[in-house]
Image (tube, rainbow, N blue to C red; front, side, top):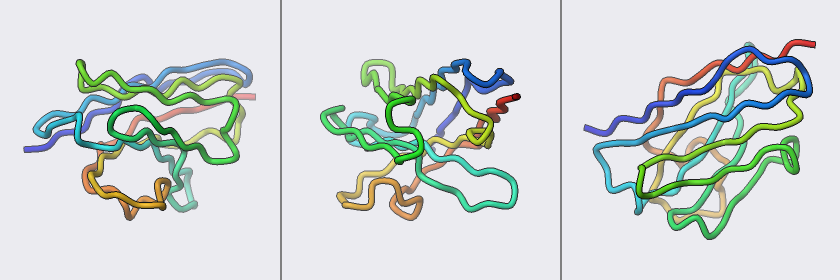
Length: 125
């Protein structure tokens, strides 16, 4: 049974930092591309960042480029999202997801098969 579990969310002031972690089990982690998504109340889920199976390629939404960094540790079955210079607009539930699909739509939620339950990030002004 595949499980994807996020952690690291919380409340932070604008300008601060958080690091999210996501651990996947029940699959061969090295074969999976991993993505981070977020969903704010009343809004659609949007792609934030993803990293390909070997870590060789990363992709970012324009709104987070230069502030967020995705990385993975295949030995620990874990992917991270380092979030710096957080803004109030970054407030959302953050989800981690996994896929083996080869696609150009790396930040499209429809590309991903397995999802975690999410971790809340709240940025106060």
